[in-house]
Length: 210
Image 1: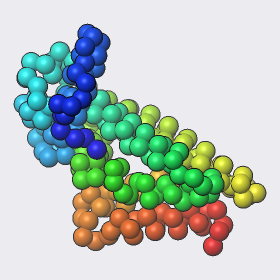
Image 2: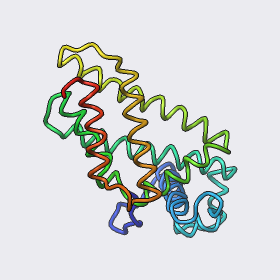
Image 3: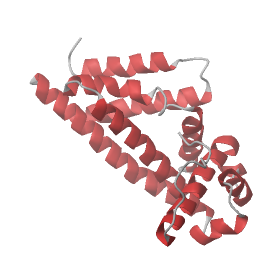
């Protein structure tokens, strides 16, 4: 998801653009560091090295390491959510077909990458110990649940079904997150294709299509 800086990109010109560019570079650097070293091994030095920035710049945009972790989580979650939305928006299908397509998007590139998986794994672990990251993660997941719930509601309406869309959404997220976690730790046990099939089978059962 996060590629090295490109010299072909238009350079920021205004003060606001420069600040946004630098802050984004630091957040992306933090994600690369998290993916490689984990939270405990991520330092000002590793973040700035990954971002191609000076050590003093990090303190200008973030007061604490906790703030960097929260920003990294929000950025990663936001980028993945955007990629999923854009992919499903381009998919020409019914509400039921879009819901079935969602696992394919979740478990294939550009969403399902080594960097995204390992960075998420580090940040998920951090929610156990870091109050700020835990609060941010809770709000992000609430929004995620609402989006998936709306998808189940639309699919059920299309089929003329009455289902507990909230429960269905919680179940799908639990299944897909568990598979993400499993693949992040030991991808020699399960494949992305199997993860897609498991999630799609869950959707089929919830929509009573089997």
